[in-house]
Image 1 (spheres, chains in turn brown, yellow):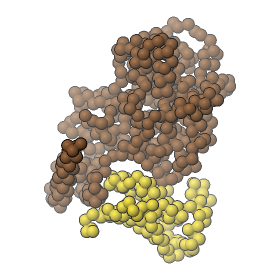
Image 2: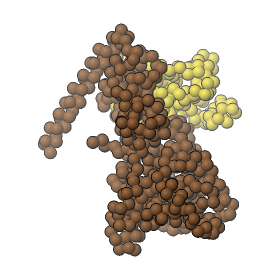
Image 3: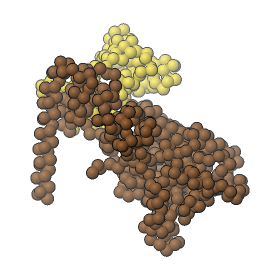
Image 4: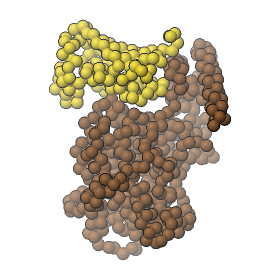
Length: 455
Length: 148
């Protein structure tokens, strides 16, 4: 079994091998071999770009079906604030939350309140922090994965504060089990998610063994039923509904929302994976040391741009933005009490229990000298290729193909332009190198077995 | 050590080409990651390389980076054709800079470039001939005992 859980599956029956995903993948984790796409689990960061790129719907996000609710005695829905952005401007969170209760959940929790608490906790953490800057928000699981896999040097710059949805689930379960006198295990906490990536942080959290949530249901799946549920609902007071909104919390739905509502001066907000990669490259060069905090989301415009949302991402971004502007103008501050948050903060209430661990890609070889040799050979192979990145071999680019060859995952003959006379010298070196590493791997596992036996 | 275990590559940098500034250090960083160099060394090397690359982009006509990796050490030779440095001792002082206002507007020219390279490298040598160019030798030790 693979050590990594992913929220993306390829339906090989539907896959027509059209290679759209091959080019869309920002970490070059997809190969198309024998006409079917497959994902290299080690490289995948669950960004979901391939889901959007596939013309046949063959790449399926893995979320929970509604049926999961029946497994629990009591169920609570915890919608991402991005859900609040999916409906027209006059529909405010209060109405959406009452609508959710009609869908079969026993209660619906306003996650914006917890988001607000976490915003304050982030502010506290930023104030006390003395290490290398900038600190990076851990709100987007894809960004956390990206850092674990491609920027392991930046791992200590991730904010180690628990995600609002996890905190909310933890606290709700504690409270409800006391109130209702039932076991915490009988309470099902479901996150209504704007993207499949949240599934991985539930099934395989980046830093610890277990999530407090029991599943995630796609916003796209609840949208239709929720719309009908809200129809004909009594129109409450708009002003009252407005006054119940935590401005800090709704900011979590869009990129820049945390920075803006906290009024962080030395902060920066980025969205879109390719842009984030450029920013992270700059951090590695030591260019952004004067920035305190970076809010980064893999999806354009933040969670409102998630692949499981319904509304156009600019429309939903705009709804949240206008809502924040209105709340600012009306000076409505339905936020958690900062003094309370400080008390909780000092009692370790907010911190993640484990630690973010890097998960760097395996180097070409464990042995430095051999890795150097393989890298040299990769360059030599690349020089013999056409460099047109046609993708027919199944790798996204010629350079990636060259790497697959030195790793032994692909064969030089897979290239449609393969001509033996170009590669004579290389073939010998290649077989020498590959044979060498195979024998080393074998002897390694052999010694491991011996050690295990002794145990 | 036979030259079998040596990776040598060469990169060219064009002076004044701000649009591509930083690309060389990014490509080299990718190579170091693929080979499996320790992250803490990669980050020091990235900073040193980027500063060197920016010096060429800002001041010189053109330059070359010669990358040399062996299992023992990581070595960069950075040669440029440019104005050279009149007083190296002065240039190595933190805060000394000949940057123009325009460069400063872009966030460069704080006079931290050369000292920053030296601080991050395990070994650093600099030589320069006025009106000809500057050569930097930057070395990082890969075996544990030699590293900072």
